[in-house]
Length: 227
Image 1 (cartoon, rainbow, N blue to C red):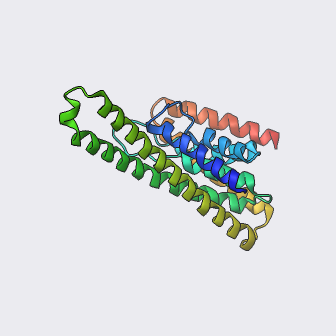
Image 2: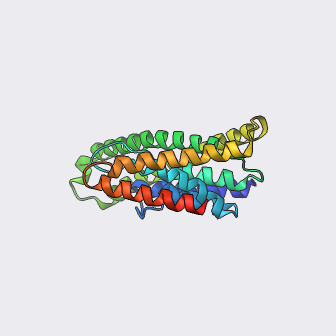
Image 3: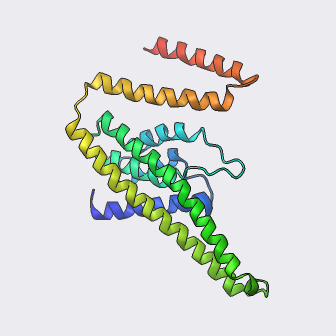
C-alpha cells in the first residue's frame, strides 16, 4: 500500500469515526459500509465489503440503547477492508486475523469514546461561568475542541488498526499454511456462527423465535438445494 493510500485510508477512517458521535451520524460508521469504503480507497471495494459484512454480524448484537458503552466499529472496519483489499493473496487465515484485529480495535474504540465524552464534559464544566453569560465565541471553541478530539481519536485508531492488521495478515499468510477447503469451512463457520448468535440475541425470544426458526429452516432448504 502506497503512502498516499495509507493517508487516504486514515482520512476515511477519521470521517467514519466522527460519524459515531460528532457529525453527521448518518450510519456510515457501520462495519458493512466502513469496510466497503476502506476497500474502495485501494481500488477493491468488494473485498472490503466482504470483511465489513463479517464484522457487521458481530456488530448486530450491540444495540445503541441506554447508557451502555458500545464498540466503535468504524475505524477498525475501514482499516480491515483496506488491508484485505490491498493484499494480492488474501488468504482466509489472513482475513480471519484481520477481523480479530478489527474486533479488538472496536473494543478499544468504545473506551476512547467514553474518555472523549468525559473530556468534553470537563471542558464544559471548566467554562460554565462564561457560558452562562451567553458568550457564543466560547461555545464555538468548545465545539471545535470536541470535534478535534474526536477526529484525533478516530485517526489514531485507524492508523493503529491499519499497522497491526497489516502485520498480522502478512505473518499469517506467510507462516500458516492451511488447506483451502479447511480455510473456507473455518470462515463459513465463523460467519454462520456469529450470524446465528446475533439473530438469537435479537429475535430468539417470544413470538419472534418462531419466525426465526421458520427463516432458518427455509434458508437451510434453499442452501441445500443450491449446493
